[in-house]
Length: 269
Image 1 (tube, rainbow, N blue to C red):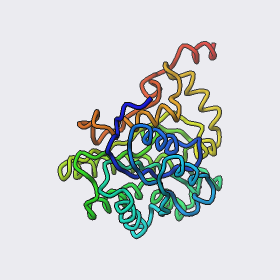
Image 2 (image 1 turned 30 degrees about the horizontal axis):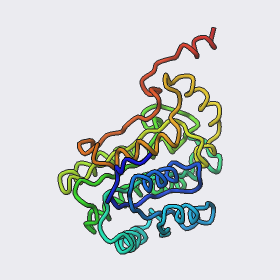
Image 3 (image 1 turned 180 degrees about the horizontal axis):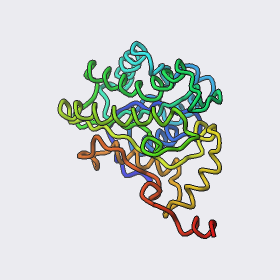
Image 4 (image 1 turned 90 degrees about the horizontal axis):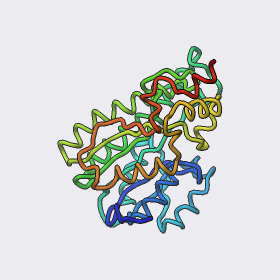
C-alpha cells in the first residue's frame, strides 16, 4: 500500500541481484512510495541477475558501477543526476562479498590479499560512495544514506569469517561519515543489522540454514524477512526519521537482545 512516503525523492539503489535480494525489494517499495531512482551493480553482477527486468518494472535505468572504483562512482553520480534531473535524497549501500568465504578459507587461514578485497568491497566502498557524494555535492539536505550490516559486527559467528570484520568497519564508517554529513548537509547515515535472510548472498554462507533456524527460535518475533527489511529501509529514507543518524539499527525480531528463548531451553532438556 502506498503512503507516498518518498514522493518527490530521488536516489540510488545498489546491489539488486534477483528477486530474493533486499535491494530488489527495496526498489519495488521505493517505486510504490513515489520515489525516482537509478539501479546500479558491479558489471560482473549484472551478468548474473535479472536487474534489467527490475528496471523496467520500476521505470528506471541500470548504470553499471564497481563501487570500489572512485571513477565508476563519479560516473554513476553524474549519469544519475542527468537521468533524475537533480541531486539525491537517498542512497542504499547493499554491497558485500568475501573471496575467503567463497573459496572456503577459514578465519585462521585467511588469504590477506583476499581480505583486503573483502574490506574494499564490503566496507571501504561505503566510504568511497559517501566521500565522492560529499566532494561532488550530490546529496540534498536532510537526505538519508543506509548500509546493510549484520550482528556479527558485534558478536562472534565463526561461519561469518572475515565478513564480520568488514561489517564492523562498515558500521564505524557510518558513524564517522555520519557526523560529517550531518554537520554539512543534515544528511543522516545509518546501518541496518538485519536477521539472517535467505538471499542469494546469505544462503551461500556455510551453515546458513542451521543458523537461520536457530535465530528463528531465539527471536521473540521470529526472523525479519527481506520484505520487512525493505519496509524499514523506506522509513529510513523518508522524512519520518529525520533525526536518526550514526546508528546501527537492529532489525531482527528481538534476536539481538534475547539471551535465550524458551524454545531453545526446551530443546536442550
